[in-house]
Length: 179
Image (cartoon, rainbow, N blue to C red):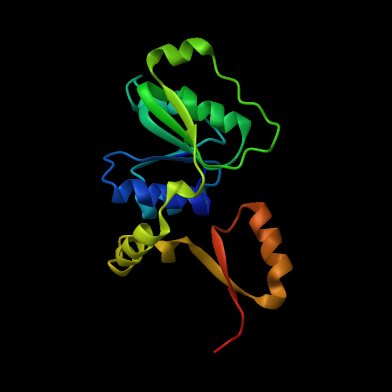
């Protein structure tokens, strides 16, 4: 999983709920990597000091992973997401890659039956999925509360946006002051 913001951490939790035996979280923010462990990651990679593709290949004895997810929205991480796949693997791009940005992949890499796909909202079916997600939250298995870094008042909204841009918090709740 590339990216341990709110979406990436949710994907880590989703992989844990789905029964994944190994979940490798990748980010450059050590605090977010620690949060990924709370959400169900079994391994973490700080990409600020290592090549994440090489690290994943090393962790998987050169095989690569069967599934990878990109939740940052960058050309480089989308390409790395595909590069770390084992034969038959699927890379899913969740992050919003800027319009007009082209992802470059070597044609020969597709001969190993690897695939890349995008998703919007995880392909959810609200009427079916929302009751199930609420039940998982009630059971303590869907760790939504873990995603909350802090709370801000409505008059701190501009500071909240600045914090969001910095990548420091996972998610802040806005307290509208209504009781």
